[in-house]
Length: 211
Ligand code: SF4
Image (cartoon, rainbow, N blue to C red; front, side):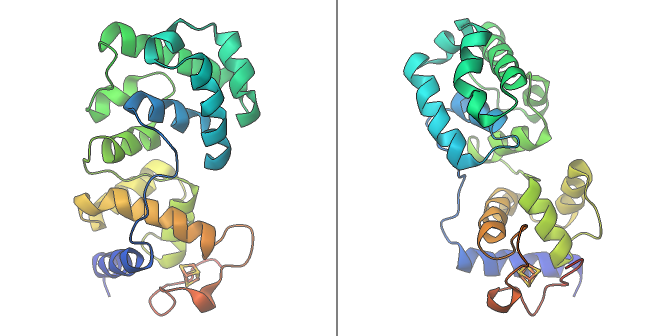
């Protein structure tokens, strides 16, 4: 089986396994997803979903968050870890959106990448989830699973994994595929325990590399 054929088979099986898998960060506006994805670095999505409720109690819209003192943002987001840099990035990002984009999140990957605190992972997430465009989100689950499955061979650097996946994943499938990898990575192909290969829907086609 070529890597492309393997990718298509994995995509189909994960679709059956997790038909409704979507983004696990809660948001009802594009700028809120930008805030959440910055907070999610080295923090669980569950915790982020709780902390942002606090944040939006004080700053319910983009303008109020752009005007907030960085120290006040930091006090609220501190439980997510890296409070100082996350608060600084969120504040700077909201100011740029307010001042340069009329309060709207741009639907252009390269413009997103220029926003403070926004890297390829975040920009891809926004492109896929907010704008429904092709996207490959290489988070920790994605990188671990595509290596184990054999879709990439020993690549750990997020951008390199992303580029390798663009070669074998149909663009329109990328965003949902990555969300499903997160679900599979949490439930079955786990990081902290031995993966549960005996109950995995990919067991007969997975390379089980490195386990
Ligand atoms: S067979 Fe094992 S290593 Fe492969 S994806 Fe499933 S749980 Fe992970």
